[in-house]
Image (cartoon, rainbow, N blue to C red):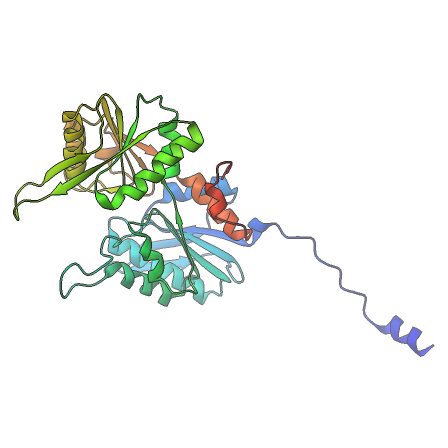
Length: 347
């Protein structure tokens, strides 16, 4: 009888709440660097961009205000650190700090273009390793994970500590899909320098696996006879009567790219194309491309194009929004990110 009375007095068992959809705990935010890309990512994730204001005070200081609850949420902040680099980097750091102070459960910085990446080692005495210093700043702000697209050098992943994993997405897969359907004649993939041979090789293998396009491989070796003298370029491999794709991770002023394209044409190339994950296009880049022998220059939308570049008929933009959204979805669902780049992946 006592047991029956205790059972009657005990509270009813807790009923498990219906499973919450994954997107309910996922919050996507962005700074001012590339809002269009963030909107595309949100569309692929079938979610809305979180409500936040990233503005400036009268004296130029960055002001961040988040207008919704992020306590216990998985927050993803989309912010490439492109031009203006320091301003966009400060926005990213303060957004991470704001989310951390607002008790977000996990903060992932989605950095499609990682600024300062080219300063990844000491080339001379008394210079900083800025790529590592930026990593330390982001860690100090409280970031839990970083997602980037085609880091300039793979060792940048090691500049973050073991508690901050870094996913370096291969933006070349977007270029492979585009050029694989282009119907190129006797294609050859060219690396503009010795350091980019591995990237060009992966691009060539992607064409073969996904589109059954057998492409050749070549490399340009740059030499400088005297300081201040125009560098000389030597080609390793054959491009005669071939459609050539120059593959690099970024295009800045496009000086080396346009000169390399002219050199390939002199060696008998049929058409010269270029693909790069990041189109920085500083200074006279657009004018140089317009006046060069390049048929087409393809870049991804990790960096928004200036009006001059957007109106340049030779510059074409390919979207990486679906790729980044696929990575975010897999991270959130605790699935393999590397599976994105398998032969049968559908992002």
